[in-house]
Length: 228
Image: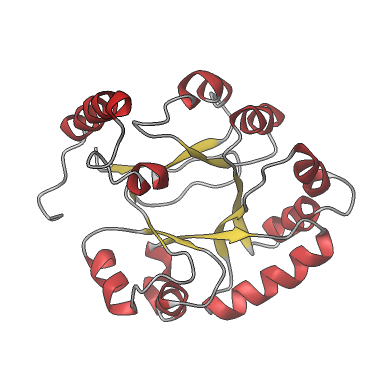
């Protein structure tokens, strides 16, 4: 299936969510016209890095179409005070009353996570924002699988954005067992697969497992007829 349903303990997106999302990194040359084309083809998950660009311009101009799109924003704040200021700036930049998903960005050390969830940490303010309807779901991005597993066991988040693809399947053993039931949803990042040039520049010992897993996935998940 090319579309899925997003459900978490705090939020359920009220329409099918495309498994293929679109993200920018600030210096990305994507224009609003490019992003509009993706939206017209069924992409409805937009992941914004927090730097003004074509993606933020597109989101700000969605108008009544805003409800059709899940907007995820990478959130750098670690303290409640910084979270208050950053969320206000995000809502202004995106011209929106609410953000569907905030992900605490690039949490790579246990000490960072402890600061976020501790007294006067960013999580404290973000929970308040959830109660006010300004944020629907909270997540985290990390490359550290043991840390991600610990976060999942804690049950404080709605989703994890992790590295998981044909070249990096370790999450199957280290993280997946901890995200059953009411634990976080998983958003599997494929950036490393893309950076590897998919198959072309993969090393010899990686190329065949990567090829096999990629082809298995494509066979199991054919594109709908309206996506080219």
